[in-house]
Length: 162
Image (cartoon, rainbow, N blue to C red; front, side, top):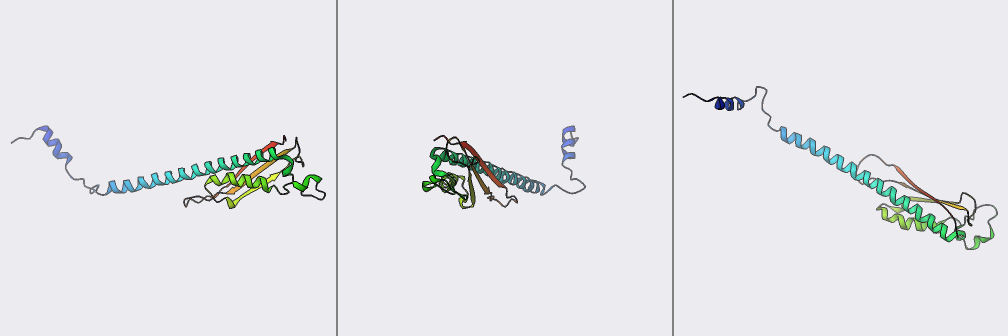
């Protein structure tokens, strides 16, 4: 009995290769592919958390400046050899502003005890129209074991109006 051309072609494709078979190649490709996908997913997660933390720190600094602008002379920096007379009811180290900043920064989903808040008055006064500057720093601790620990900074500055 004579075979047709299609049957001969089908027989040729079923012949085993000389170098061996491809058994297990799919599993190896899957493992390599899933490792790359997981690495990219976790790296993206960390990047998203860095951006989120940066936004929260910047917003916390803005909130601190807003508080300092509204409360004006009660947040005066009284350090120095001759503190001004309005230091009796003031916040000599900016602890009220720092408390507002830390209260806002707790939404960053990180340890707020590691956040550093620096309140400065560039014009060396805290009455209108002087300026106030709030700087927030945080050593970012990654959620995964990726080997990077950036120090994130957020700052805001405003002019006292009250």
